[in-house]
Length: 343
Image (tube, rainbow, N blue to C red):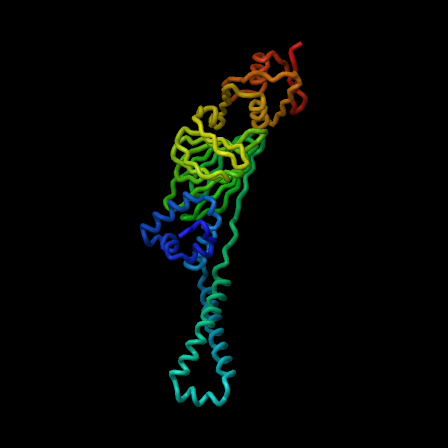
């Protein structure tokens, strides 16, 4: 069966998915946990299906449940009286004399009535509640830590926006990211943790990784410190192993997999800025993100690749080092730094 074609209502009606949801069958639990991890693109449908089942099995208040039962009983009584009233008077004795025929008529009537009741019940009971998204925006020049409801920790770099939905035990956790963040995911058996960053979806379970979304001409960059994650892009799925970094330039192109320097990729968490043969564009992107400073090159030349390491430093220290190596000078005008040739 091709579950990738399923919509939320299909998952909610599937017996195997129900057993997974109710945690009543080990094989179904194992199958669906693995399937969800391998198909992050279906997370929206899976979460809605879980919400449907939440309403059906657990969260309908007693007064609502009693009201629905009374509504169904009243509906059945009205339909039965209406059908009997519509039967010709001459047929009434026949119905009395031939009870089997009468039972047959009512049994035939029960099918559409049951269908109507089911439709009414589904309409009132299985209406999913919309996800309650929380949003956190980190301004330029600031780092911060966000603790999620499931126990996971997210360290946000400057100029980053994080969105996440309200979480309850057993639910899947879904994240939207614009900017750069380091994730320390709390292992939670029986649920997936999915981060969406532009065209890239990252499905994880108990791991640590860094995500950088496109900015200032830089591509997506996902660096895995430990654990294992599956990346989904328009070009397909890729498994990332520890100490591997995936770069994605967009438009359905294949991921570029390479090793990485941990300090270069994640050192910003401890206030470390480290470059290896970085272009002017990369240096400018870091200055903009960290200090909200725009770097303008009026030297007329493209500086050589820059290598350097700084710990909790001021931007002036970086600029002095950069200009010394490339024989440049700089002028500060508000939040703009202008690079020119040395006179």
